[in-house]
Length: 294
Image (spheres, rainbow, N blue to C red):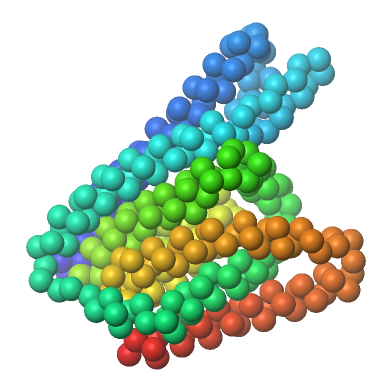
């Protein structure tokens, strides 16, 4: 019991540091919004200021004779800076913490071709499986889903140079999050708890970290899978690979979905069936990964 309490205390510290970075990032973004509003002479109107803060980065704001476009590239740059700080800080912390233990993973076994293909498959079909969650939010909580859509616009490839976007969203962000949630948090929990309690706690914190309901729900589910892959590969690089591929392939899937007619009932039904099949396939690939590394 003492070890569990100590582990939870450390986890609370790790999460608090990550949350503090989020607050700093949000504070910087609000400062940028305020600076733009000050330049445009909008600071005297509380209603306009409130709408600007609610809409945030990457959203064109139009109120009567006032029109302001806040560049989403600012949000991406601030996000990238936050991720870089988190990756550097937690990465070094994780390295020195783990260097105290003599265990070394078997990389050749962990990343055999079958496992790498399973990770790519989980990442690719996971994108379509998540569409089921998004559809559920769109139907049951349309206002919540609309907020998520507005946030997603900031991470569109057109927001900033595609290469920079891929670096921040596809590489830097996933590595930073893995160092915190699987490396520091799950790794610490795993030394005091069995696999599933450690995976669930770290996944719930991962979901809360995203600070919105839609991302929070699917991030929590994805977090359990990431912890499972980390457990089976016995190295942080297993979950890192899955997370990097998952984020990177999302742009490919987005372009692929854009080629389909959105107003076709038949296409809609076929996509729903494919998304359901993708969810089943993800479960199969995760289970197959278990057998491959047993």
